[in-house]
Image (cartoon, rainbow, N blue to C red; front, side, top):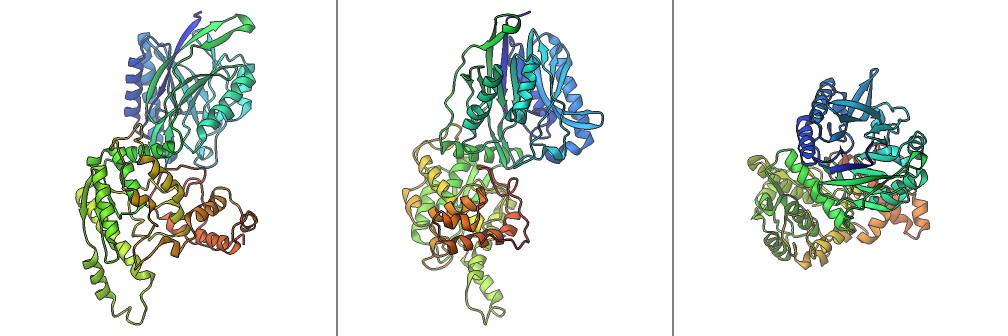
Length: 555
């Protein structure tokens, strides 16, 4: 019986459904971890997470079983064992589980007991919960294998400890949310370790998958709650940890030799990294050569251009100014300078010829109608059509740039500025946009491929926001100041507060009623919006699923 174990934490990216590529990456990681006893991979690393309805395809289940067998056979060389997350069928039921591959075969399988069914998660749609798991004996150590959600409920870890578990190893597919690092470590992992007296290894994946992004940030905590190791966030990492047994019998304890504790990205760099990594993986995995976006001279498009450059490199970003007769010279100058600072391609395509054509085409039908928002929306839709034409002709994905404040109240044009393939700002309120813009002008993100210096003129950040669809237009003509609007929306969207509650907190009642009405009326627009990265606890899409047609109001 060995008194030492080397357990390697493999914090990897993934490709949902590309089982061959995921298996290849795991084997390559194992090859680099020679000398380790065990290599631990994140939850469902073989299939990718979240797989959604892919796991309802029998062909995927069959292929997963075949790839798992191939991984198991690879361990017959006497090298490291592997803990592999995948899907499993037992007695006709589908399970989310992990397999211990050692000595050329699968030596143990454990299923996830607690299945999350809230927010972004809908695992009960696909899987049946496994029984309370028993520990696995591995090279003289009793390993408890709680999977992701299992550690958020004390019952599983307590059961494993009572059954003799000496080390918890928890494979995770835990998406990023603002302030989640502290919750994972202090609110969950340390509590389980202290409660049971068992140290805990937490291995999380990194990378973007459609609307969710995983930040990695894997770690090890001791039985007394000390942080023994902290892997970096937002990048892959493969880190060996050395474990030593002390004591004997009932007094046996395993301790991890202290490893490097990386400092995690502070706010708002964490938000910026989430957007950057989400765009990078979405564009690359869907096979786009780059992105194109409309650069208006405003803050939303400027920060989206910077995010795209940090995600893909400036050479893969194409910014297009689409001026109308209402576009100010300041906006033209700011857009030109912004593109220069980022170092990306920049073109100007005036939309006035198309506007004139629509005016002439609709003149007879609109003859007895005053100019109104219809003509404003036509400009936006002309821009959307133009940008989509560039996307179709040359191949880059169209990136949309509307923020969550605008999307909440419908201050966006469907089939116009909402047209596109992905939106990094979809879950970012306007105040967040200001914060990350100021931050990026002073810092370069650690995963960024863009320039070291500022990415936009200061005037873009300080000038009053405007859609510039009519003379002297300002966002404040139609909306409350963003610091008020965002606070109201945080109450209505993130916290599901009523008009009465918010007015009781000091907000003007009529303003709150109006915002609530706009929020519900814009639901049909949001259903047709492109996907965008989830940042908070209630993003539009996976988290918040309201009916389009309903008559309920709280005020």
